[in-house]
Image (cartoon, rainbow, N blue to C red; front, side, top):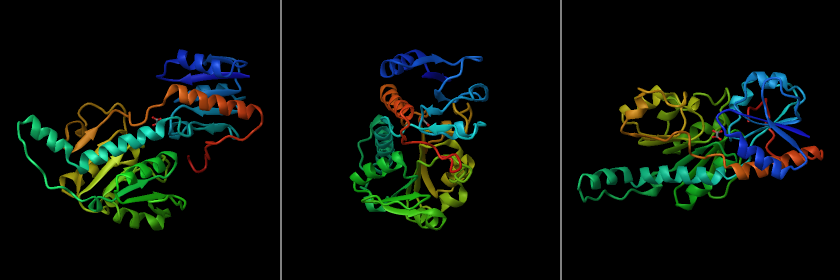
Length: 306
Ligand code: OXD
């Protein structure tokens, strides 16, 4: 069995070593133009040329959570795209969102600034029931985030395309449920896949439907958010602020208003990093299962977009 590795911006050597240890019978190499045909590929942001030159591939394993960039390529019909199910990312997402939520709710940024300025002062405690958290997207990551937030006794709402049930989370679904979900949420956490339906989903109209004094946490894709609309709503006082990990253009371009906005906290697309060893174990397990003719979890439905 031949496996090819085509991941821009990723050091190949440790991946090749790990995959070779997990699949000793496989022949594994880094793709270069003109390379021999492979059966399986491990990829992140491969060029179209890679897809065009590898028509015999049976499955593409994406080493990130989101497959939107892969689905924008012209893929042969029947080529399976397989995403990482979790591989250590869900707990990182839960940490990141809990941290951003609690930092905002407990006003820790204000306390930090006060203490730095030599001011010993207290703020009035806020009530958890005034900060219902709405998680958009209830896949592996979204569900873990919703459960983590519920542990801190925040009221939690969830919204997904199809109906879901999660203990401790009031779930809404579909287009009809969306407005009710927004109206019942004050902190909006985005974990949706990026598809033509979800692009620009956080805009002036939808963000204005949140409980006033809303807070936005975007850990999915920059293209879910209309940047100017968020800025306008913050300036109008309708939205209190945001924590953003993902951006329309990454790295965030110099001079973008997010960089210096006092109510926006930024991180460089780091909310849930791909953990190499966990990912290798998962991918190797799935390659072995496919080679035995068994089904695997995480196969993307290209029509649905995730
Ligand atoms: C992603 C990732 O898909 O970082 O965004 O894994």
